[in-house]
Structure formats: C-alpha cells, structure tokens
Length: 225
Ligand SMILES: *Cc1c(COP(=O)(O)O)cnc(C)c1O
Image 1 (cartoon, helix red, strand yellow):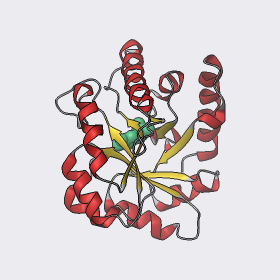
Image 2 (tube, rainbow, N blue to C red):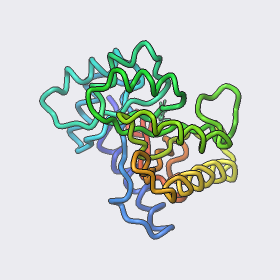
Image 3 (cartoon, helix red, strand yellow):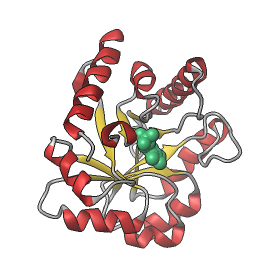
Image 4 (cartoon, rainbow, N blue to C red):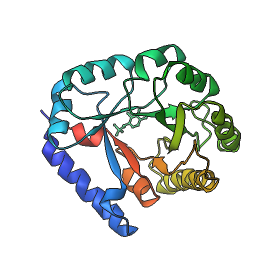
C-alpha cells in the first residue's frame, strides 16, 4: 500500500517551498485530495492525515465515498465534466463545483439546487479543442449571464493546464487565469465575488501556487506508491 504519510510530507515540503518563493502563507492555499482513482481505504487514510477537502469526478464515486465517510466532516468538490442529466444526483451532495462551463448546466443547477452552490467557472485558457471550459474571450459575457441564476455563486475560476513539461507554458496559463479572475473580481458583482483560483495538479501545483492558486487539486502525488 502507498505510504500516504510520506507522500503528504513530500507535498507539504514542496508546497511550502513554492509559497516561500512568492512570500505567500500556507493558509492561503487549500489542498483538495482528488480521490477519484483510489479505494475507500486510501480515501480514509488521507482523511486520517487531516485532509478535509475531497474531490470526485463521477456521481457514482461521489456517492460511494460519501457513504463510507458519513461520520466525517468533509467538504466535497466535484471536478470534471458534469452531464446535465446527472445534476440532480450531484448538486445537493457537494459543497463546490469546479466545472461550470455552460449555461445549460447553470440552468439545470438553478432548477435542482436546494441552496446556493459555490462554483468555479472552468476556463479553457489554452484554447485546446479537446478541452472543456469557457474561452477567455467569452468569459465576461458568460459571467454576466450567470446573474440570472441566483443559486449559483461564482467564487472563482478553474483551469486545467496543458499536458506539458514546458514550465513557461504552464506559468503563462496560470498567470492568464489569474488575470481573468482579477478582472472579474474588480467588478465586485454580488453573485460573482470571484476571489478564488482552482489551479494546479500533481505535475504543476508548484507553479500554480507561485502564480496565485488558492485551491490545488492533487491526486497522484498523494496516492502514489
Ligand atoms: C484527476 C484530476 C486532478 C488530479 O490530477 P493528478 O494529476 O492525479 O494530481 C485534478 N483536477 C482534475 C479536474 C482532475 O480530473
């Protein structure tokens, strides 16, 4: 079995290194443990390590993990594409949605949510055709349109960087998202405070944190053997 404790120490060390580089505090970054690919046993192990923010990317996995951890105080995040017809099974079980990327989804959330839901608008910064997310050029209009859906609170932006080892590309991607976030936050919209940045995964969280991430989503680094 993976040595979760060792992985956590390693992550904390690298995270603190990056934070120090840019003079940020540890309390400014929330680490979300992405449990989508691991067993209930490993999910319990990461909670045992003190993690209270967990992310799943499928309604079935979410339900399974929630049942197993019903006795724990957990903040649940949904990452990845959420099919419109699955909204009703998910939206009232989660605390954060990281993948708001279309009005049809907003409309279904408005219809199904029993309370206001904290959302990140997913942005396709790199413009890759295979990636979901709102294009930066269309972001302003999309945010504006969300005013019509009072159940949705836009707490921030989310992106997935391209799969590349080129740190310059990664840095530009994250910096661009930060710039988008800053511009929206500046408008001080009541329904879209947009103060948060969900960016950075196992391969690139150090750069993301240096560029201002407030939530990083880490799976592999925590659960590797
Ligand atoms: C799987 C996934 C992650 C975690 O990726 P790792 O490389 O395992 O850290 C983060 N964000 C999203 C949207 C994912 O689908």
